[in-house]
Image (cartoon, rainbow, N blue to C red; front, top):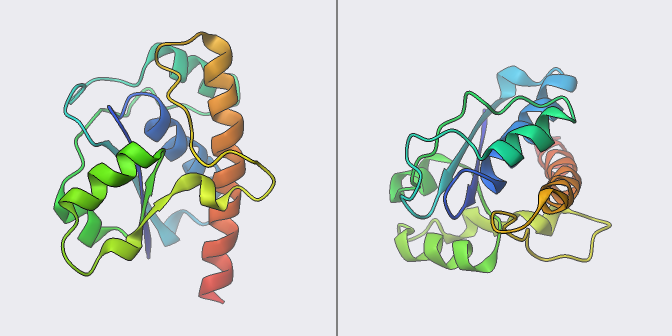
Length: 157
């Protein structure tokens, strides 16, 4: 079982989108029984809240339903529990490193490390922007999620 956690600031835009995208890839590959996937935020701003409506709409346009997800805060135990803890940007990466139990630092990475054909190093937060920012975010996350799945499958063979 491979455990993957996606992390952004508030767990209402980027990380639930990444969770939804990755779940879709797993479903399409008929790999549901091989993964545990979750998302969280580095801050407690939106605990218990649904993902941002714009994120839900952008995902729905691509056949992904994230409406049942609820915001939660990442904790140190998550880093011990999950094999991959994927931060959306360097700020969230640093926040995760600060709570990381000793010896688990190598589990924390930037999601965009897995996007082969994209120049971006971070997934920008679309929260304060318009709808196009959510579509751009999804493009980036889809590329990175595909690369992540391919790397996991290569490492398991």
